[in-house]
Length: 433
Image (cartoon, rainbow, N blue to C red; front, side):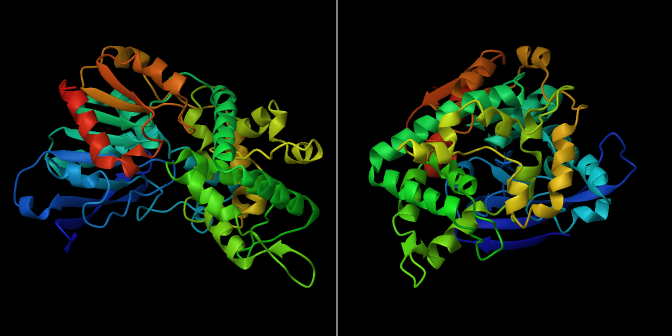
């Protein structure tokens, strides 16, 4: 059953699909996928090629655009677009603290969640493609984790692809999670240094907030335990184009005077909890490190272990040594499952996933080396979320892949510079640039 409606300049159709939970057991349990079809209003009756959009994450549903926002307007010049909520996200069958108990205890929940990585997402795409395109190949645009999925697509089912476009999402083909985070912490530190150079007044503001959190027990209105480590994790914003500015505005009025002395304001706490909560995207926390797992080695809370190799990120030591407090970002830690009420019931499930040793490969280097699908990738210089060196190493191993390395945009360039980014990638894929 489909619903069709209109927004400025576009016609939208809600589409739902049933796919196997486990594609190796097609007659077993099924889940539902939701996707939104978008076509330019003046081309609604035309037979157009399809573009499938794979959102970043993991754990986020596709963008809810209004009209022709961001890159969508450029895509609608040539394509009919399908915005897919990947399994477990958005309006697809959800996976969260409310629904996962239907799988039983933590072991059952962990086993269920192993089927939510890029290999399963690609098989979902191939299952629905004949229903959408009538069997024709489609172009895939993968942002961030969606780019990881696109490389898996090229490895598993290139016959389904006409063209592959990747923005900020070329993964290492063989790096363990430890390698990913050893490369990440120095990048994060550079982003923090750039932020403090832009807003030097934030050095003292961050130190004051960190000191307050080390000496006070703060619980946000939604029940989130606001620790100094949680405060540091707000550095996640620094990887986006406007993130440094948003962080600055957040820090500038953190305290209010009260009869008990200065306290973090309600307004500050309200904004912080919206930034920290995983209620809307718990899969990001649950399977984030699993997207890097491809062999018998457990991830074992990689970001937490590797952080110990970078003592400059210890806030207490920074305060004692009169040093700037460093923010973190793009890292998941076990304490999040203690602090966040949306994650607390899933702590044991997360522990089992971190200990798992039977992960399967997500990429096929031999098949990528023989690739025949036109591929273009935007690689952002010093991307905070995806290591540039890892991306370029992968680019060299995929036959025919053309890269655009730029410092004009941050990781979210497809949002902030959407039409230009997509236009450049399409030109690269066609060989016109």
